[in-house]
Amino acid sequence: MNNIVNVSDFRNNISDYINRVRYNKDSFLLKKGKSIVAKVVVYKEQKELLTEDKIKKYVGILSDGEAKNMKKHMRKFRKNFKIIK
Image (cartoon, rainbow, N blue to C red):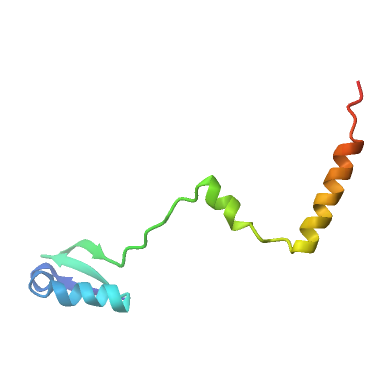
């Protein structure tokens, strides 16, 4: 729920408001005069996934037995693979 707070009250009690945002995940609309000028919300940093991170996400998806079986079949496939012209 958004609480409307006067800018002067926010300025005078900024530590209290920041703690409420940080720990309680509250959000506030800042009002100056008759208009809303800002919204104070908790900041959520979004990390871009690098290709390496995307690959690491799937590491361990196969059991050891499944990985060995897949490796065996891939070797057999590569051995028997021929390019037809």
